[in-house]
Image 1 (spheres, rainbow, N blue to C red):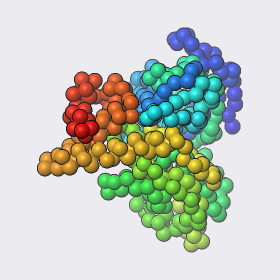
Image 2: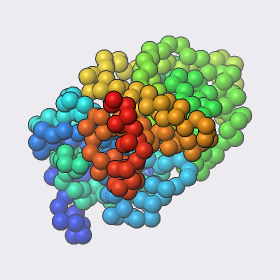
Image 3: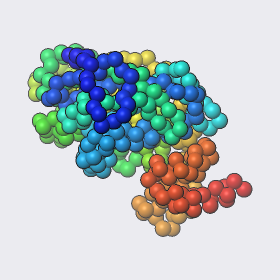
Image 4: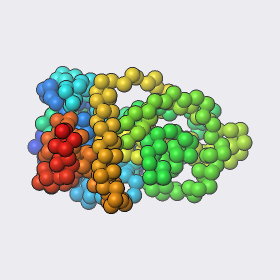
Length: 379
């Protein structure tokens, strides 16, 4: 169990967040989930793809402490050993943007999936900055708590708790990549392929993927589900069709004869809240919780985000058709970039913010073909 202590401040940074106690954990911890209570310093506008800025802000915090780790988290080709959530709280529509309300508390989750990231978080918490700056929208860090207790992969595997039925809730849009497209359904093989990839990358106890997933396909039963799909603009490339909701899972009686895979199944279920589900989890998608959580109706802010995603998809189809004689992956990428630039400009985002999120020179965004097409489509 975590214990709260008052950790000394490091002298290398001028200010730290005003928390009275700092969560801490053992040095061998590999998995831990944190939740931040944040309060806007003033009512402020927030662009709808702000999770990109949260992602960038976190990596900049890592860079200041461990530049090599930051580079790995940004550029590494393996599974990412962390994920973040979007802001949970009262996000109001303001034209085509979102509005943070002063004196309201917003919650933000960060989860570590490796010992190196867990060690960074432990060190970082002793000297947190006072605010998170999201392009002019500032949120004070009021408190940091442990959302998912510190543990290790070996401890997940050794746990003796095995329920006949387990529930998982997907609290942010969740999607998989399948044959080059988004696949917004929690098919058992896709779910556990998602969890096993992280397990095999970070647990140091890899499992033969194909054999285990064949066992999952034959053994897993979905007893109940309540799901809803929606489009979201996520990450730096285009829109994603994902699902939210909850499912109840169990194993067939014959499956229980394979004690090794049964043990791994329950370990992966316990891993899910830490690692999230599906792809783009480092941009807020796929946030997963244990238990059956009643789904809340879509807020106006969520519908606004959905509108942006649908507009990006619509424009991508138009631009792809205009370039169809060229074809290929490059055409798809260029068309998507044009669509993002134009859709976000329509939603009131600044060229500077778009250039930063897409990691493109500002001049390139200003003179992009997508910008020129804005005049054509507006006629």
